[in-house]
Image (cartoon, rainbow, N blue to C red; front, side, top):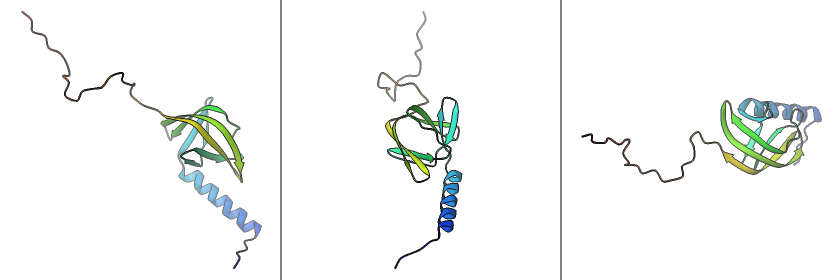
Length: 117
């Protein structure tokens, strides 16, 4: 059994799928002070709408709303249908605290009170 869908119906279904992806995703990409919406993200990359997505290479920042999630190095992109797929070479999570150079002991004193004579 084969399923035949007219071109107009398929185009409408594709447009509705793309609109629902844009609405559901809060992910944004920031490059040179400009933001671009991200449709989907997976372990090795992400996709953006082909009509509005620029050709990107290099370092970009990935946000979820206003929360800075990752700094990414993008090395390859390929069009697939009405989306452009980008791949990560490096994906680094953004930390809010500085990195420690030593192990922090859980029962360490908070401060030191010296005895004065």
